Image (tube, rainbow, N blue to C red; front, side):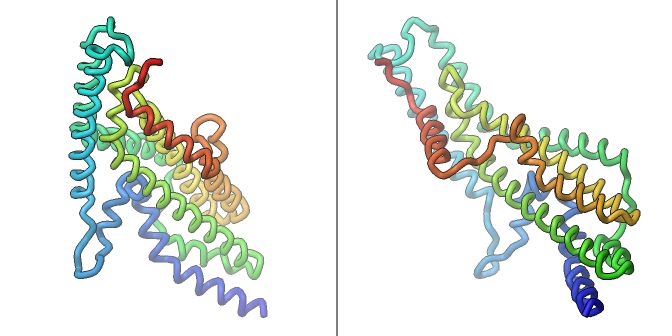
Length: 278
């Protein structure tokens, strides 16, 4: 019975080889440029999802809304005098308009630079604990020789790695949605408090730091596992899974329930609109 279970676990590990090796090699791109992975998926008729086309549609509508909000704020503040401070220099509003336009146009280049800095920072950390190029499934299989206990330990480690991969994919989709929403978020720069735009920047920074910590822990988990310390590898991998929760007190805000999420969304949308003075 034990031999059959070990053999079953061995087959499960062998079947995961392609998934593990392909995803862990490009985990940074999976989080920050997940559309490159999704572009490889063909939909009906052999077509592919046009993310650039989707972004252009969002960009066009955001530009229309930016112009409308800008004109509405000018009229309400300096002509109707029922919103904001009419004595405030209108150059502040014009400067906010220019800032929003610059962010809309240059956000892709700024984002690429941001990801480059994160990748360089992560590479510098990983060089301190180098791992030889090795098949993860093969490395796990080499540890199964200890019997049923080590086989179960390898299975737990594999499942933890798969959970991490799912976390990275989910985070990548969130980042993709946030990048798509940058043109709308930049409209908040017309307001004195800059609307939801600072939260966007904070979200990118939080995701980047969390990703660096998680990938460093994954690399350490692989290094420890290759050297035959399965229990340590499992503990480190579980810590990597719990990293977002661990950092939530300092960096990452918890998602909360649907009521709080709806309230946050309503406040974010309200921040984009001109404010009426009571």
